[in-house]
Every structure is written in structure tokens, then in C-alpha cells.
Image (cartoon, rainbow, N blue to C red; front, top):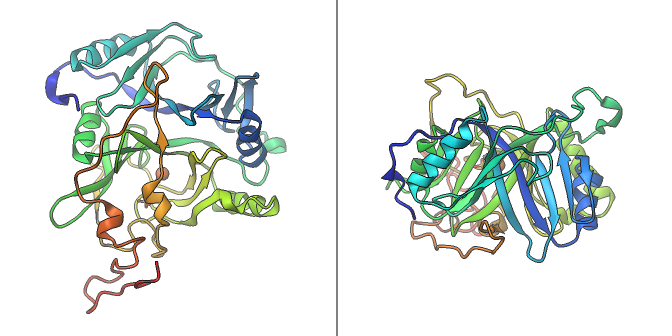
Length: 356
Ligand SMILES: O=S(=O)(O)c1ccc(O)c(O)c1
Ligand SMILES: [Fe+2]
């Protein structure tokens, strides 16, 4: 991995996670999921790609699904505070010694000038400011539906060395809101933010670079429950991978869905404000059975193992580096069957024993 301490240059001023582009194998099938089930608004579509946004969003899109040969993540894009931050980004990443490309306005429909990089963790990342404004459907309750999704909330990426990834994102002035570690100080995951919520990006320890999930926020738990009922009604309950439930980390109510290519999409609500300078970091014990689900519901094994391929800036799928630190699904023995509920109990209150 590129030595991220190689520059004292000023980092770009990132506002928030802003959009993702996913490559999908069947555009019509994916449209049925993202529009037919999730209810995302189509800003523009053609035979190659569909540009989608959630109801509170007024930029052109927060998700692009594009037809392609290999289901993969094509880019994760962050919005910066002003157009001049693009020059700052070029200088910062040039000094870091990673691949940097300027993109003209319109290279991505609806997006102005942008800078794309292959970041030190191996991910295709874009920084932009200018974008086309479109109708904001905040109060278009006539089109919302019972499962209305409000906005993009965060990216979750799989990377082998979480402390190194945290250090890279701290270099971009992201702060850690929560993390998971053990008594030996192995770090299994970290959640980092620029907007004043729990995260814009989460770093999940594992073989990477791979994309773990893209998350959208709703305002109410009932909207998440409706999405579950909707999938049941169309006999597609197998698209529900994990949840619904209440996270320990972030305190959010959550649901994980798998799109037709297996890209993981989280629907999430009720995390908390992190905007004050002294926002305290919460550190969880990897053996705490309530860390990933506040009710102690086990994490399904696929949630730990499966993630999406990422592309380089030429659209070529990237290989992955193996994680060398301990793996969470190894130290919690399967899917949390042997994590404690009450650390002081003797024996600690395991929930499921060896059922999983
Ligand atoms: O499963 S965790 O409680 O650690 C969790 C917390 C927040 C998230 O966005 C997430 O994907 C997973
Ligand atoms: Fe998430």
C-alpha cells in the first residue's frame, strides 16, 4: 500500500459521500430492484445506464447502475466544498504518488468537472463539486410509497489493514465515530465521517479492496419493514441477506439486501449526530455479542465473507490483498455463536452456542 505519510499537502475538503456507480449484468433486472422495489427515482436512463436518486436528493444522482460484463464497483464519489478543491485533490494525490485523472464536465452525466484517483487502499474514488440540480422530491408524498428512501448515507469498503485505512482517511480529515477491536488491539472495523452522522465510509477488515455495501437512509423504521413485506409479496425474500435489526455500532435500525448481482445494499435509519469537535469515539469489544446487532442476533456468515469486486480507472477488475490480521468471523467463532452477552457472567452468556 502507498505510504500515506508521504505528503504534507493539504487534503481536499470533503463534504460527504455523494454517489456510487455499480456495474450490473442485467439492466432491466436491476431496474426492477432499484426502482420497482427500492423506489429510487429515475433521473435519466438509456440502454446502457440508469441514473437514480432518493427522495431528498437534488443532485442528478446518488447511484448509477451501468450494464457491464463483470458486476463490480466502478466508482465511489465524494462531494467537495467548492470547485477549487479539485486542484487541491490533484496536488494531494499527485504527492501521494497514486494514479490521478481529471475528468471534464459531463464525462459522467449530471456531474461537472471531477478528479478520479485510485486511492492508496486500491479503490476507484471521485471528487466533484458541480452537478446538475433536479427536482427534490422531499414532499412529493404522492410518489414516495411506503418504503420511501430519503438519501444516500454511506459506503462500506473491505480492506485488509484497517489501522492503515483509518490513517489514510484521517489524512482527509475524516474522524472515527466507532470502531471494533480486541484486547490485543487488533482493529476489525472502523466508521468514519465528514458529514455529522456516524459515517460516510466504514472500513471493514478483510481481503480487499472490495466493496461491502452502499447504504441509503430512510426516516422511519416502518419504511424498512415495508421493504421486507414488499419482497415477501413478490416472493423475493431471498434478496434479504441480514436483518431487519438494530445495530450496536451506530444504533441504526438496518436491513441488508442483495441486488440481482449480489451487490449488498443497506437500508438504514436512526443513527446519531456526530458534528461537535469533541464527539467521543465508541470502541466495541469484538467479543461483545451486541456490537453488530443490539439484540444479539447473529451475523449471517455471508455478511462477513461476501463483497463486490472493484474496478481500476481503466475498468479492469482489481485483485485483492489477503487480510493478515485476525478475521472477525474467526475470533467470534462462526456467526457470533460464542460471543458474550454479559461479560461478567460465568460462563459469559453465549446466545446460540454451536448451532451455527
Ligand atoms: O453491524 S454493525 O453494527 O457493526 C454496523 C453498523 C453500521 C453500519 O452501517 C453497518 O453496515 C454495520
Ligand atoms: Fe452500513
